[in-house]
Length: 85
Image (tube, rainbow, N blue to C red; front, top):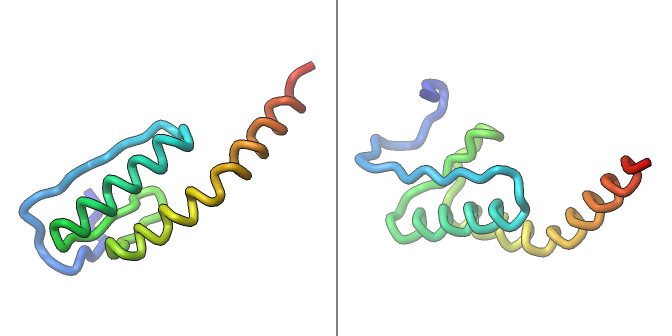
């Protein structure tokens, strides 16, 4: 499906986590992927950005996202409010 992506080895198993754009779903999906990767000595593949991440780096991103989510919600609410007549 992604022939140009190098996952550093052949994998026997894959866990796919999907989310629809809700900030909480994003945090849960990334947290779950990072935890699974850490437990299995695996990696996290983010197809949207085409990135292969170590479990530790994915956990760092989750922590950063968790800090940023308050600002994301504020910006989204402000944008929606400006769109209303």
